[in-house]
Image 1: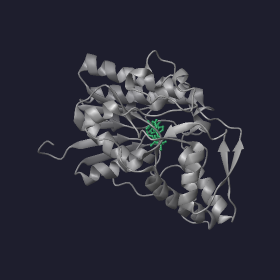
Image 2: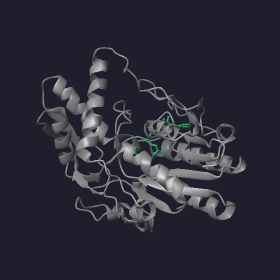
Image 3: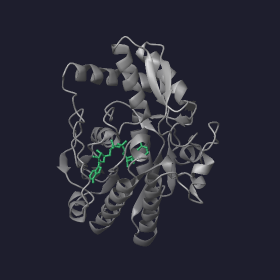
Length: 344
Ligand code: NAD
């Protein structure tokens, strides 16, 4: 670290991973500016400065990136499979604007290091058609054929970061997350991802004295899940690493959604009765190949799925109870990106 306190910007600091990353960086002595269109919904931010800015707009990106050494770019219009499969145009439009403007503003303001948060959704659909899938290596992203607009945008923004690295000497990083989960994330309202949605359904069943948990599809689709504490540790290690090529960040233990529901049931203390219904499922199987992650960072995520799910379930059960009693957690009623006005 330099002599003076290093100054960093976290975009998307009102969101799940961004909020946790702000706390992580504050613990390590950084001065942190958080930027988002909304404040964190479940706990106050620890950022030194928090600005409500719509990063689709160029002028806002210039303001957000002034006087900082590093940028962690996490802002995105995103959600779980239900949201991603129903909002292609908005996702592509909004995220291209956010990422193109934030990156160019960072260059204009002389930012030194820039970390872009990509996704396992960049990988080609045809490599993920079996539940018993081969884990995905970074180079598998090409030839490109992501399933959704969300993945295409991530791939384009990855390329943009690589070109800024090569053409403009910006010290860039690209991380591809695989299903990050944990407390303080969206758990209802339509943008929640599978672990949070399934924890909510299990908590509702338990509190109603029932056991039924609804699952989209037959539940035999597979994924790996990475706990939030491992995620922020990995992000930070990557920023410090000097590695500018895309890097997976996830766990490499693959489970079916049915198995995930059983683990959630254990955390809840119920034996879930699985009800399979139609719904968007994403690719059939996906896992992270962590060979390069271990080579580059000398580390890999280590928190067991059972432990992470217990912490996540306990927090979500509290939220469901608080919501039912009309308590503090009656949040997420307003989506700040609705209506999605066209942005300059
Ligand atoms: P999140 O939705 O909780 O956080 C994203 C934040 O970006 C939200 O708070 C949102 O309000 C903000 N945002 C959206 N549009 C904005 C705008 N125009 N201006 C400013 N802020 C805006 O999502 P997350 O899970 O914390 O994800 C963080 C990053 O990681 C995203 O880029 C996401 O695509 C990526 N990612 C996450 C996962 C995962 O499993 N959570 C997986 C792959 C990739």
